[in-house]
Image (cartoon, rainbow over all chains, first blue to last red; front, side, top):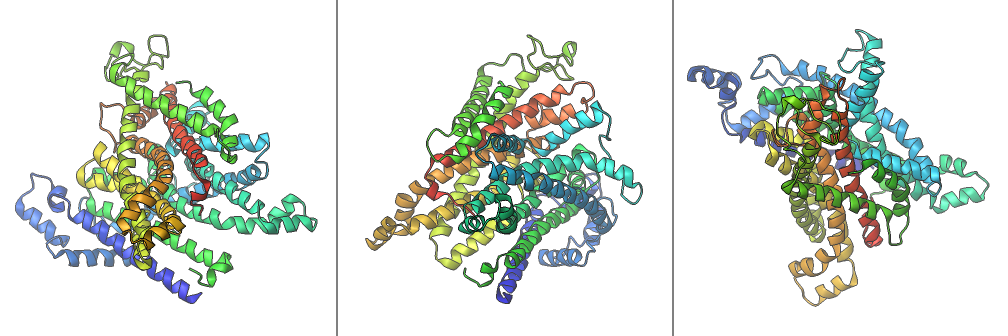
Length: 316
Length: 292
């Protein structure tokens, strides 16, 4: 167990190191000088040189890389080239917004997918199961931003029940916050739920074929009882994996959803920094998203070790 | 394109086809028909569209659907149906290149990782997993920050982001093939790894490649739509479904149909490629399925 844990941690650290080098190298090879880009073509050479010095762009690349990593690890990534404001608080503010979106989206996805997938599996030969199955197939084909636009059309423009866009922090006005959260979180969650449903269905179907479930039935449990008592834990393993992989999709989906609903999250920050050519900010946000994905994958590996005792015995 | 009909057909056919291991998977049929229809529409747009899709006509702004303008016109008076037809070209083109890049690199990577000795194969797969930390959209946005937004950047970024799915699947298939007796016999007879890869592994994993290509196409269509929506895809005036949606957003209160038509186009195309992938998976040897 401890060996496995150490192994996972080593893999995580190596992955983080390699991906940060890749991101840094990619941004470093870019044509042109970030300081020149930031100041525009009309800036004088001395001003550019000054900015280069201020942001350490005149130092060797390795040194620049190390100071970038140091800044990220200590949560003090320095100032933006463009706005000269500190990046750290900006990112943490925006990250909170995005985490609300992604978290709520994930919960909605689970609420939709777990019961629906189970019903689809248990009734997979009955009309109700087939209809749900077809519905999920259609849900998979709808991108989240399209769902968002349709939800706005119906619930904001058409019925006027909910605001079409905007964002209010929960501490300022909890009611407005919830109202504004509903549509974007639904767009993310329902679509992701459709994807998840299919995995829940196939995981539960696999479990239903297992011998231990037949044994449970034989000793007198009803199908639902047997499934709830013996099946779910086993079906959970593949579902948890997919959930984690979906986190990456949700984070990226949030980029688009934030644009649709004009929400000041991490995604909007990324898009704004691209259009402002604020490259250090782009670099930071990309790295944060990649880190989040790697971290979640790591956590899933750990959860695996916890829920599946067979994996603890190191049979690789 | 009769979207409601195809969706209704899917409702009755798709799940049946998925579960049955016999031929005639309904999903293969329906998915295949949708894909052929989208392909046909794209090809037709080279020779004919009802109107010039980029023609701005102030006299015909925001027309409702009619016999003249089948899906109506947008705020510039451009014909929506013609734009959808042209948009299918953009979508398929991006899909082809992205899937091509992903398949080419992913298949080679997967076969090498599957045939290589333990630690090296393991290392390749770790590197492969690393790409998963950079989803298509993120990669495209990052590339665009450096090279500027455009179709080429989007295609390549989507392609790179799709490599891991191919590589993982193909590695699974390769590992299975490598355990078969004919490969063991070939190795005993002294065949080199390259010959084995070409003669035994590649033909046996080609089914997997086709299945993943179809699913990958669906992912590419979704990614392209999202990117065009954000303004990182094909630049105007070339029509693309994602940008049509983006342009429709400000008109939602006046003309929600402008969002509905490109939306249906995206959903139907994705549905088609997904169903085709499902159907092909049922069709090919189920033993080769990499179920994780």
